[in-house]
Length: 95
Image 1 (tube, rainbow, N blue to C red):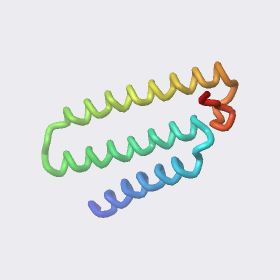
Image 2 (tube, rainbow, N blue to C red; image 1 turned 60 degrees about the vertical axis):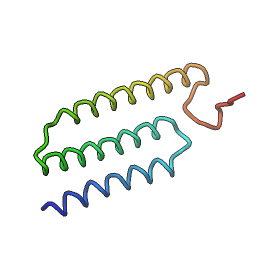
Image 3 (cartoon, helix red, strand yellow; image 1 turned 90 degrees about the vertical axis):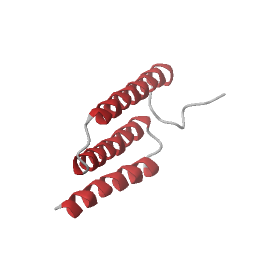
Image 4 (cartoon, helix red, strand yellow; image 1 turned 30 degrees about the vertical axis):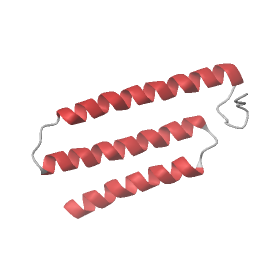
């Protein structure tokens, strides 16, 4: 049971990384894959902290930082769509 759970969490992490690397043209898909990676890390921390019988305050801090990261990503997405009209990285000029 424990090995299966670790394997599922590890596969979630790998799938999130594969989507992050392969779909790098759209900002929304990149943000979704980053949230999927963070969700798998949350599950791994939850599993680990339950295994060693540690308190869950660290998970609350992790969730707060995750929400801050998501809000920053969404604000970048909204500003990019307002200025350029879409979320393609090809139409975004850095100069």
